[in-house]
Length: 212
Image (cartoon, rainbow, N blue to C red; front, side, top):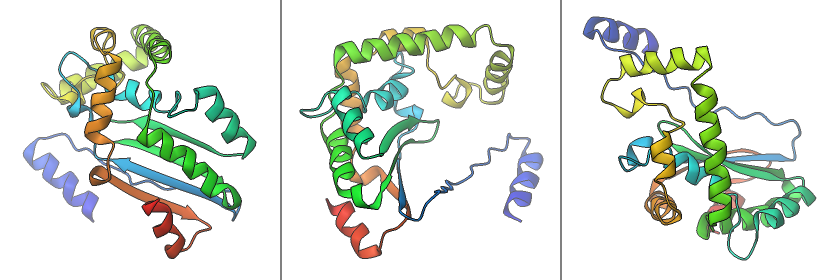
């Protein structure tokens, strides 16, 4: 019913209809745990002229943190059959952690380090920037992507929804390591965070985990 009403109103007002589907996580074994956290950080938090900085920041969060290099974090996660990552979308920046119950505490410690003390080292950011620029170059010759970009630009003129989420060459080249630290400081905090947890965990243990 809600979707029907929204469709009716969009048609009546002659406006585009954007449908947001909530997160749904599945896990293969009862001892798996998926922890998804969403930060209220859309692309509109980017500074004009630095389009793509949100995605660069999200990818950079796993490139070393605290006293650990990116390689050390990856090795520790692999040893525990755990993983976590960060993703930037139009309406939020999100992260996901997956681990076995017995390794939750140690994996959460690594995640905490990535959240609290990301390095954003210059060499890593330069590599991620080059990868993003290659993606932009490929998008320019992909017909489906070109069509999608044209549709969004037409549907959402003068709005960030109308610009490609991958950013722009100028924006990526103009984003510095200092910009990423400042951006993460603005959005990487409890005030902006929503957490979704699925798996083998109790409410009591979850509260302890979140406080940690």
